[in-house]
Image 1 (cartoon, rainbow, N blue to C red):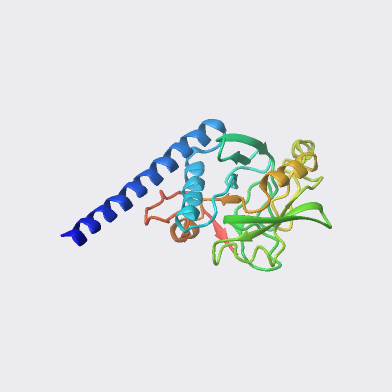
Image 2: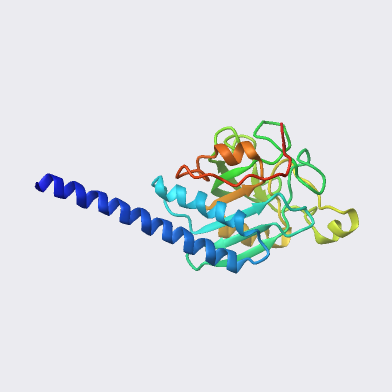
Length: 234
């Protein structure tokens, strides 16, 4: 009888913990969507789901979350950085995609070395450093087959003069990187400092293969709404 009662209490505790976790994710999703009204709420929801999955897996909780929506043109501010504890928006910025991902619109994504294309999925940041692009931030890709070559490819956050609203107006797009999510030099240092050492970056595009197979956005076995938007992969 005692063993049965223990089993019942343990199951109830698990269900309560799961309910609290779901409630936390739901409230965070609402708060971040409110903090960034120009962002696609569905993309924010997927980013929060992926973030919550890292907690379920036992990883140390991130304090900041960056979300990039590559379904938007490069001429729009499509990068948002959130403080998860305070649930507020820290940055809303232009961000570059890889030169082989497309012109103003990114449509092709790759995890391959020398592809010069952007990778999708969830990344965890590492240490900052100074390299050929100045102050930069290394990242680890967490999704096998989609971005887990990011470190070897030197896919990092860095400032770049070609990420400029002036160039966007003149050329109809900002400049493109070799696959890195490059940002404006004026904010690069502050943005990197806010995102270094174990924070999360969620790189989104309605790529059906990634949406259906990502272990982070399908952490609980849920389904993701499909999109009619075409996508190409290398």
